Image 1 (tube, rainbow, N blue to C red):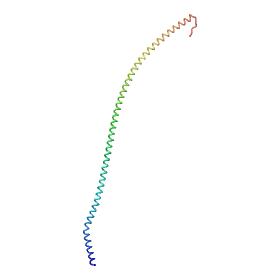
Image 2: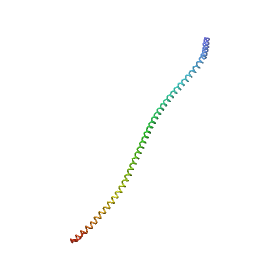
Image 3: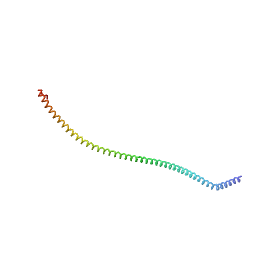
Image 4: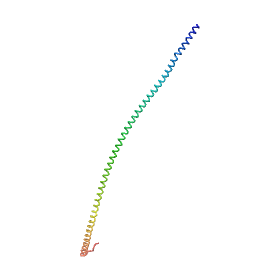
Length: 166
């Protein structure tokens, strides 16, 4: 039995060596496959990260596009506001010009009125001078009449023998 045990042991050693010889390349291949699997997983993860980065970039691009559109709308509104302001400014300028024309007409009318007033004042001055002369004449007439009347009353008082009242 010892022979059998030796034989079994030798067969076992040979099988072990054959298995080692045959399994060694398989193990190497298996190691390479495992490394390849790990590299493939890393590549897959890298690809997923790249995909996520691409999606994030796409989202950022869309957000940027929306911001750009909003900015464009805001710019258009600002342009419209500016145009309305320009129109208002032009209307204001026209109103100022009309106001200036109105003021010029009023000034012209005031100058005409002043000329008319000056003529009227000169005429009234002449009228006043005429009225004064006329009043002086009337007063002189009455003064002379009063003097004559006084002489007459005094004459009548003397004739009647009355005392004169002064």
